[in-house]
Length: 380
Image 1: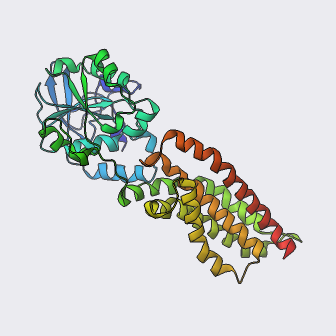
Image 2 (image 1 turned 30 degrees about the vertical axis):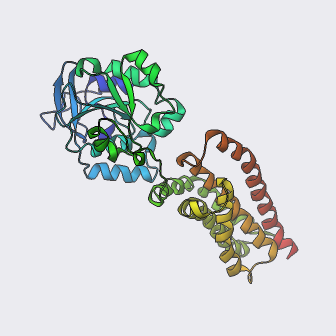
Image 3 (image 1 turned 180 degrees about the vertical axis):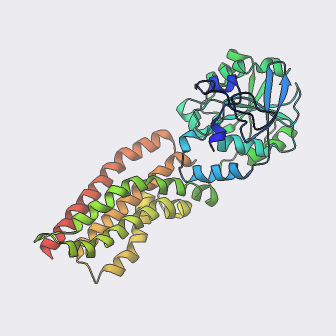
């Protein structure tokens, strides 16, 4: 994955905001430049009026797949980027189409893979390693950034036409009129999914209705779960010992045997809530009643908590069981809200409104659960 982050020349290093090199190193390949390693996705270089442009592969190799898997598990996710700038696919000419994407490598890989067998130019905007949709919402995928990247790459010297194909999901951050004014290139918004690009280009930039439709299928929902699960690891590091200590509090101040008996049950409730919010909720999202994600997570937590209640109702008193269900539901509801930024079902204002109402209720449920859990040995 590190190779993907290394520049292939002075221009790329400058664009990434890093020193141009850290001393010369022997070349492993005739295509490499002194002091730089060739990125794994670069196949060769092509000469243009604006200088050498890297030609990228359209077939993903093992390192690409491993890197994508690591990112899906939230490993080095913030650094999974390519150098912003101009790339070539196939053997493009001065009349070949120019497609714009983010420099987030998963986005970059999706586009280059979709262009297999085609000749095109690929312009990677500097979105700070963030995907197209999120970058557009945050303002890093904007008309200004695209225009600046067009100028920095000297694209006007490479192609004779003045049209760019942008991702449809970048429309919220790009003003086509501003971009035309700033760099002289007009914007055509392509399909939602990268794999529709060949048909879109062959049709002369005419998109079929299905190409414009945003989906959130089961696969698209569950592919997000590993990231959400990985984000819970750090809180779990301190939550598990805290729950163990709280489980041992009783009339004798602290009982280690009591902690061994009640602690694993508390851990099980917490882990069940995590699975309910990060896996069950996105899997069953369209079928869970309600519009608010916090409510959907709450319902998923209650559904997962019911067998938990049935299993432990003979071993625990009512107060302890209620505390566990409150934790489970609160955790599930909170984690379910994390999916609001990845779904077409929500809007920024709607998400903000929901969070203002849901987070205090989730926090109150957690606090009440802690009180009931600690109090149960004194009252039972």
